[in-house]
Length: 230
Image 1 (spheres, rainbow, N blue to C red):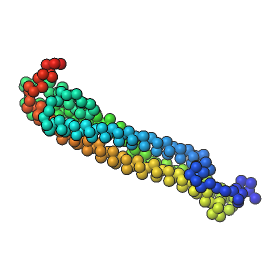
Image 2: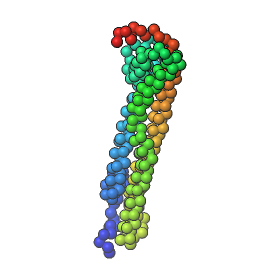
Image 3: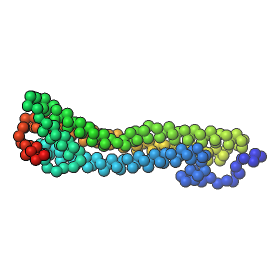
């Protein structure tokens, strides 16, 4: 009898922890890598949910301010503050020779540039979700293939093809694929949702930027107090 063959009465642990502890070192490394990726993805998801919730409130407040025609010099925070400050700075830098359309276009460009920087900050971390969602299944599959190769090698050494010999190794290998899917599926779903949320927030600001740009382009005196104070 081959000394490397496992005794027939060995009891295999098919719990999640048991499958991990009994796995090949390389398969263990794959599993650990996927677990770290999962933790990183969920950290990004929770952070983005908090930031996007605040951004949605800011977008609603900005829309209410623009639609009501209220004073722009009031204190505000977040994305709306950067957009309004960019608008006021562009508005104060007036050129008597430019037309109203040119002034409006310049003010709107300044606001869109400020909004673009804020949107990039909101998008930070989303590439990690996309990468995890697209690669995690293949990383898990690599662990599965490696584990199955080891199982076949053990079968060849023991010259025993019974299910009791094959099942433990196959289960450990497939566990890696399962972890990969557990990482990938939430990552893809979260990426799609968060990307759509960022797009809606950006769209809400862009719609108001047009209204505010038109207002400032035709108004040369209403913000004179703020300009003089500076």
